[in-house]
Each structure stands twice: as C-alpha cells, then as structure tokens.
Image (cartoon, rainbow, N blue to C red; front, top):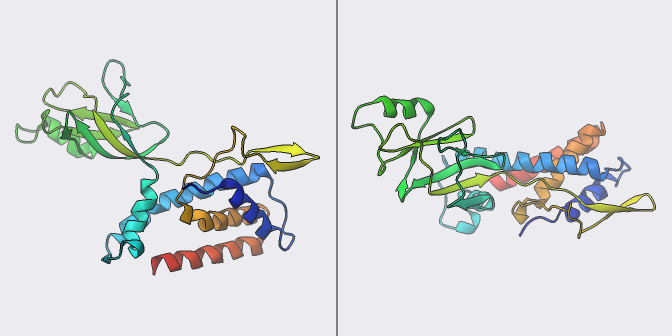
Length: 238
C-alpha cells in the first residue's frame, strides 16, 4: 500500500507550524518530497550491502535483509516485450530515465551474464572458451545502453526477458485554490502518491522537515528533524 501524500503533507505542516516556524507551500513541499523519496530509495542499496555482511535471523518479520528486500520489491518490474532498436540498426535497449538497475536478463531462456566493460570486451576478444554463445550470452550496460552478444559477435541481441528496479515516480500534492488557500484535491490528475512501502511514512516526514528547515533557515527545525531521523535509523538497524 503506497504512502498517501496528503497524510504526509498535513503532518509536515502540523509539526513545522507547531512553533510558528513558517508555512510550507505546496510547491516547496513537492520539491522536498521528491528529494526525500529519492534519498530513501538510494539508501536501500547501501543498507542492503551493509546488512549482507551481518548474519540474519530465522524470523522473517524482524530480519533486516528481508525487510529491505520487501521495500525494494515495490519498485521491481518485469519486461518481456517492447525491446526496440535503439542505436541505428543495432539492437540495443536504453535503460530509460525510469530504470535504476537491471537485475536479471535472459535471451531465449538463457541467462545473460552482465559484465563490466573490461570483462565484456575481454570475452568478445578472447579465445573460444571465453567467447559468448546464444546459450551463454553476455551483456554490458554502458551510458544507459544495454549490449548483449551471443554466438555472432557482430550482432547485438534483443533481450527476451528482463527484471529491473525502477526509480520512484515523481510525487505531487494536487490542489485547488479557494479564498487564497490551497486545498487538497484527491481527484486531481496531478495528485501522485508515494510508491514507497507504507512503513516509510515517518522517514519521509522527517526528511521533508529537515529540508524545509534548511530552506527556511530554521536551525531548530532542521536539527530536530535530523535527530528524529537518526533515532529512527538507529532503531531500524539494531
């Protein structure tokens, strides 16, 4: 279940205005909200890498690895068609602005080994034992383009199956104006909720408050939000 953007905005306003720290306009909130959600999204992968070094436990509901994977899976997508000719007549698939990381590739049922550029070129230029084949294809992602090679080294192949992590969609608090005041419009086509796991609501609020405090030059608001965020992070990682 996604996080409702109006719920977050109202809580942010309530905390920010508690001590008359200033009003956060819808335009400012939307800017802070998108920065905050991107920061949370990026942090998933750093935290997952860190947690991979720590033994988990048998309880799924409290294992940090499983919790992080569940949060990331919200953004996981599968594609099995629509791969287009991206570079001249060659078959290349642009990752696109929405794609953050490709996690699995297949060509006609065979898993594609995704390699770094140097290893990819070494395989193409190597001997028969290292060269790819249609049953053992290799791939490389560079400057947002995907290059897959099989038995014919001169032909770029189209993937037939791909799983990837997409970036969060831009969020937006839609509204209409009555008497000079902005009122939430849940039916507006501009209203876009957070895609994040519902457990991220508190984290989003703290990060938005921190950004608002910095923008309003309110050191106490920024500091309070940072302290609340740090406390939450410590609890999650214990």
